[in-house]
Length: 283
Image (cartoon, rainbow, N blue to C red; front, side):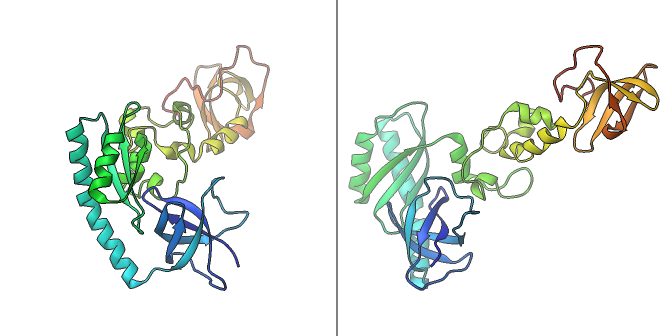
C-alpha cells in the first residue's frame, strides 16, 4: 500500500503517513492520525513518492481512520475552547510579567498536549508559566518560540495579491529572500509594497528569481559595446523577460532592440554587473 502525505497542525506540518491495511484515500480526505504529539486531525494531500516535495526529516505518522461526524464535532469544540485557553494563557503571562508576546494556542485533537506559540526577543524563563498552565488545563504544555514569518503562517489570511498568503497555503519552509531579488526583477523598492504580512520581504520575490537569472545570462551586460544595423552602440538597459536591450547610439539616441539582433563587441569600458541599468524605467 502507498504512503500518504498528510497536512496537520496549526503550523500546517507535512508528514508521511502509513494507512491501515488495504485502505486507500483520495486527496482532500480528512483523517485522524497518530503522531509523536498524539492524536491529530489532518488532510490527505497526495500519495508519497519520489516526486513528492516533502522536506527531509518530515515526521512519520499513522493514519487511524477517516474523520467521522463525531470527530468533526469534537474538533469544532476544541477550536472553540482554544479561544478561552488563549485568554487564560494571556492572563498568566501578564500576571507573571514575562517578556513575551502570545501568538496562538493549539490544542491537540487527542488532548495529549497544548502548544503555546509566542514571540520574544531572547530566551524566556517560562518554567513557572508551564506549571501554572499545566494546573489550569490538566495536560502537558509545550512552549514554542517562533519568528515573525511563523506568526504570519499562524494568523495571516490574504496577501496583497488577493490570494491566501503563501506561508499558510503551500509553502512548507520559508525561503530566504533578499533585496537583490527585488532589484533583479525591477520591482519597486518601496518597503511597504514588497513586504508581506510578516513585515519581511515577500516570499514570492523568490519564485521567478532563477528564471530571471537564467534569462539575464543571455543578454549583453550593462556597458557592453554592441554592433547593430544602425552601427555601434552601448547597452544602457535590459528588458530581461522580453529578451530586449536598450541601446544608446553614437548619435546619443536610445533604441530598444532584440538581444538576438546584435553582436557584442570588445567593450571600450568596463561593463557593469548584469541588471544595473542607468534607466530605472526599463523593466
